Image (cartoon, rainbow, N blue to C red; front, top):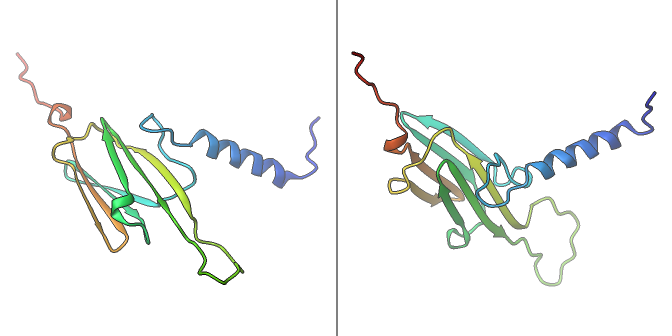
Length: 140
């Protein structure tokens, strides 16, 4: 018979284990990175994937976007330094490095992929690679 002294502690350990197992390590088979930063929406438009990531306060020169087969990696860092002569009363905005890898359901055409960064939003257009598109064959 197992008894739990603190059921919330068990849930917290489970959540930590799940987050650790989803931690991004480059362009591996992971579907998410540490936590949910940057938050993303992924849409399919025709044969393309449109990935939209929220990156407020992050300069596009500090972003590292990599594509390999059907994996997309978004990495960078955010600084939220307090103004000089102040002390922190509350800190809710995340700071530091982030690294997130997502997997899409098909191989990406690397030459046709596009990235745009405007007003803190990263827009990635990821077309399906020609070699990965289904083909109709003649039946004899």
